[in-house]
Amino acid sequence: MSESRANQPAEADAGAGSGAGASYRAAGVDYDALDAGKRLAMAKALSTSPLLQARGGLALDASRGEPAFVFEHGGQTLAFVVEGLGTKSIIARHVLEQQGIDRFAGVAYDTVAAILNDLCCVGALPLVAIGGLNLERAKACLAAGADVVSVVTDITLNPDPETRAREWIAATRSP
Image (tube, rainbow, N blue to C red; front, top):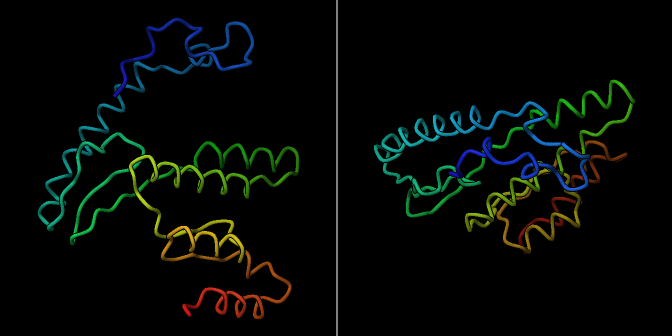
């Protein structure tokens, strides 16, 4: 865990291209409080490791606090990410309400990309691909090593969903 950034100069947390004096601190971000919350969350997460061990698994506690949590169970090493859409969804809703522009698809793509990035950061190979798939993307995901692809929108929003579902079945069925 990194040391608290609250004591760093304001310039250290100013974003590129931001106005003079712009900083997280100026925006009301309290890193002391955030870091304390992270330490508490880490302690709580570590306290769950014996629960996994009691069921035949092994938590790789060094992955706690990393982009994805890694554990072993049943002879496999697995990783997962708990991704929150909170702020992005709130912003997308405000944009929709105030400007009439639907940005939820962009939020979904960004979230899936963030989850994939987090899994790759701990050396995991994503096994299931979801979100924003069409047949071409699904084929690329399967070729890259995904075991499963999940589709909803490409079928449900298609003018002929039954035909599109049959295309999906034909394209993803093993030879």
